[in-house]
Image (tube, rainbow, N blue to C red; front, side, top):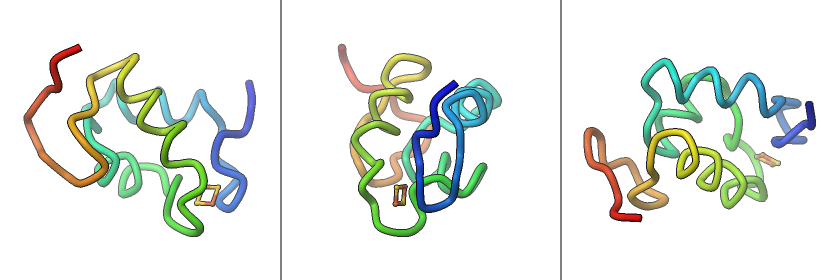
Length: 69
Ligand code: FES
């Protein structure tokens, strides 16, 4: 699988695993696996993955909320 976050060298598989274990916001994904913690260039890709696998309300932490699709 592809590397999504090149700064922290985090693969898509690792990010999806974090999302499935409960990381439902960008901030939670960052805390869970380290992706997105440097330049921020992968944030759109991270939000897309959150959207696909959990629902991404916004780029800021909104714990427990789910965006309307
Ligand atoms: S590519 Fe993910 S923080 Fe830079």
